[in-house]
Each structure stands twice: as C-alpha cells, then as structure tokens.
Length: 316
Image (tube, rainbow, N blue to C red; front, side):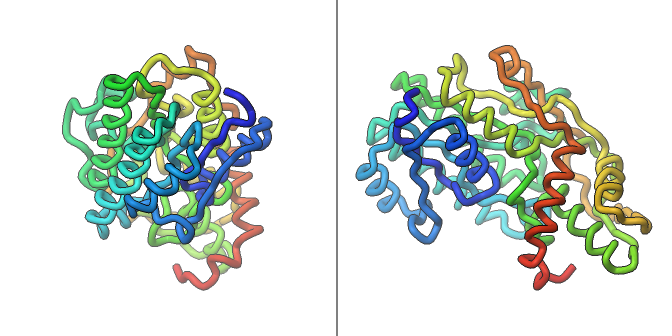
C-alpha cells in the first residue's frame, strides 16, 4: 500500500471513522477522502455510484452505519435494517462496479448467535438465532459480510470484514436515547455526581459479560488490514477479555468520582448473556490491542468533560 493511494473513509466524522482518519494521517497517508452525510447521502444509490465513479479511490473503508444501543434498536427496527443495508450495499456494489481493489467492511460482534459458545469464533456465524434486541442491525451487517465474501470468492478482490467488539472512546455518542452502555454510564454517573451524588439507575441485572475495545485500537486494526492482504474474509477485533456490566459500572463510578447508590432495573432487558470475542486469528497475524479498559475510559471521560456542553440540552 502506497502512502499516496486514494482512500475513501465512509463515515469519517463518526467515532470510528474519525479515529481511522487520524490513525491513517499519523501513519503518513496523504490522500484521504471524506464526505459528510450532508455532502453525500450514502442511502442514495445513484449519488454513491456517481461519487465512487468520479473519485475512483484505490481503497474504501466502510465505517458508516446507523448505530445505537438496545433502546434505539428496539424503537427503530426498520431503520436499523434498511438504512444499514442501503449504505453498505451502495458502497460495496459501487466499489465492485468501479474496480476498487480493496474494501474494508466494519461490522459488529452482534452478528453472532445469542447463545453461541464463548469466546465467539468467526466460524459461529449463521449457526443459530440472533439476539432479538438487535437482530435488525445484525442481519444488515451479516449481509454486508456475505456480500464482501461473495466478491472475494467470485472476483478475487481483497474485500475483508472486521468485526469489532463493543467500541468506545473519544467522539463517542453520549445521547442517552441512542448511546451504547459505556458512554451512557459515563454521562449518567457524571450528571448524578453533579446532582449531589444522586442514585444512578441502570438497565438490567448487571450480570451480562461484555468486552470493550478503545476506538483507537480498532483504527490500528483497520490500518493493519489496509497494509496487509489478510488471507480470510472475516476477522474478529477485540481484546479477548470481558467483565460483568456491574464491574464496568464500578470502574466508571470510580473514574467519574460519583459517590451515590447504583440501582439496577431488572425489568429492562439484559441483552445477550455474554459476548466475548476470540481474536486469535488477528493476533496470530500480528495485530493486538494496546489500550487497557481503565486507561481508555479515563481518556473517554476527559473528552466528555471537554465537550459536555453538547449534551446539556438533552435531559436525563
């Protein structure tokens, strides 16, 4: 991969895309393309085709998606399946039609069955039923993985899918209506601390086990896939370590300085009991995460404090 190869990062303003952009720039890549959603509507097939046909990038990294936690997935199932399929299908097909030689598709660990053996291996894809609370997003992402695999098989192109575990970090989404568990906890504990250490109510029982990867580590995995021709079509990306949601809450409470009570609302869904990734395929090739969980949460909380004004108008 030459440093002046033209690389289009779809979703470059999001948490993952912006981290990828920073990482590529830091590593000397000088010919990066990014378009905001206002500049290019990725759900519009014709506009995507015209854009890819005009720019003719050498590589496309697909970090664009409609994302959210359990609440958002439950409330907007149609948008989660349809918009994600439109975005990825438009990008993948336009890449094939315009002879883009390398495509890196980013998905999620939710593509694997709800009760799959742990840790999750890539081979477990499509072996059982999905977690109902986010099956819409999962089905869309599975379709993207399979589309890239089909192109790889039929046309011999270097199209690869990376499936990250739960990502968090700077530029995360802290809107309590649409955010994932870790940033939502950061905001809840911080605002409760500011409110005389008020009690914090969290969803579920706190017993599910989850794995978390700092977003800058994910970006290094994308860089690794960019600079190497990976021999298979699907790779898990994570730390290979997990913890109970209750333990995560205690870490975040300590970092934010909250000294109040934690209340668990077990009338709310827990989601999948456990989602630990088997990341041996990536580590055997030479990639490994570097940021431990507590360091990553501290970095994320520092960023939240610097940007807290964005969220003041959104009430708990």
